[in-house]
Structure formats: C-alpha cells, structure tokens
Amino acid sequence: MNRMDGKIAFISGAARGLGAATAKMMAECGARVVIADVLDEAGQATAAEINSKGASAIYTHLDVTQPESWQAAVKTAVDKFGGLDVLVNNAGIFFAKSTEDTSFEDWNRMVAVNLNGVFLGTKTALPFLKARAAKAAVGGAIVNLSSIAGLIGVANSTAYNMTKGGVRLYTKACALEFAPHRIRVNSIHPGLIETEMAKVVIKDIGAMVGSDNAVRDMFIQAHPIGRLGAPLDIANGIVFLASDDAAFMTGSELVVDGGYTAQ
Image (cartoon, rainbow, N blue to C red; front, side):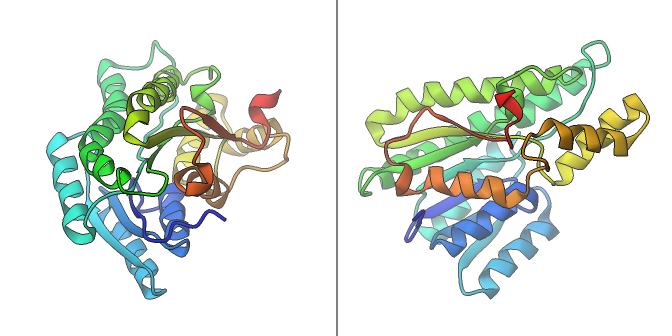
C-alpha cells in the first residue's frame, strides 16, 4: 500500500517538520525525493539521512516567494532525476494577530509564502508533471498543505485563515483544470501538529493569554482524540494522496485533525 516506486517527488519546506517527515516516508516507499527549503543546513542533513539509508534524495535551496528561485530549484530536480511526478506544496508560515494588529507588511508576508508559494510551485512544476503524467500508469499528483484553518474560522488568525482557505479552493480549481492532463490535486488539513510551527502558534497565543502551558493544554483538550498530532500522522496522509492508491481522488480534502472539526 502507498508505494511510490519510481516516482520523483518535490517537497517545499522539507528541511524539518511535516516536510521532512514526508520526504523520509516517500523515500522509504520508493520515491526519489527533492527536499527544498531556505534552511540549508537542516535540509542538507535531512537529505543526507535519507541517503544514508540507501534511498535517494537531494537538497536544493528554495525561497517559495520568488519565481526565479522556483525555476532554479525545479531545474535542479529535473536535471538530477529527469522529471517530476509529485509536487507537495508544504512550505508555510503562521502568526497569531488580530486584524487590527496585523500590519500590511505582515499580511503581504503571509500571502507571499502561503498563497504565492503554492501558485508559483504549481505553475513552475506543471510542465514537468504533465510530461511524466502522460506516460504514468495513473498520472501525477499535487498535494497542497492547507489546515483546519482552511475549513473553519480561528480568532486572531485572520491572515492565516485567509491563506489556508485560499489554498483549499485553489486546490479544487486546479483539480478541474489539470484533470485532462492526468494530474490529481488534493489538499490536506492538519490539526495542531508537534512541529516548530506549533511552537509558534502556542507562543503567540500564550502571549495573549499569559501562559504557554495553558494554551497547550487547551489545544490538547480541543482535539477529541486526546493529543496533538505528530508529523508522521500528516506524512501518512500526504503519501497516500501522492500514491497510486489515491488514483480516484482529486479536488478532495483530507482532514487529519484528531476530531477537531468534527465538533
């Protein structure tokens, strides 16, 4: 199940956290993996760890907000591995601020990473995905990282809500547009996951209420399953959506949130 033998996968924001967990799992499932990030040292270490286990990975620098950076990173991937089968638009940022406290610079930064990055990645990778999809058994795949904040409102996170809601609908539009080219496009919607971003979430909200520990406990209680998520929980979902096992899924939302949005 969920094998990715022979596939070439490009993952943005893959130096650590969800992206790194996904890269490692995809490599274990047989894929050749391109790890792209601005965190060069961490990204190189993740690629080296994968290669040390007999799999195949490379690291390339990528600033997802810059078209030229995407072009260079995708060229590196294609030159090394010969094409692309899977794109995972994972890179993202978070801050918790009310609308009144969100500056225009804050807003533009959130949009640049969380929305522009997904658009630029999709646009840049698309010709190479189309070329491989035309010859693949069930085509290619794009997986976009949204959030539960792309499904429900979250107070004091309006900029983040807007970008993740945008990713959700952009995914559906691309699914319709790319279906004739045999490229499936799906979004995944994590709850709060134990990553560096989760630490930022807890710290930002903790600053508003006066206690990081209280915020952490609040989030745990908000997930009916009784814990925060682990990177592996999300990596499992991403690998499924990218694999041929999800061959009849496109324009879909995979919610992996410990029951948060079921309430």
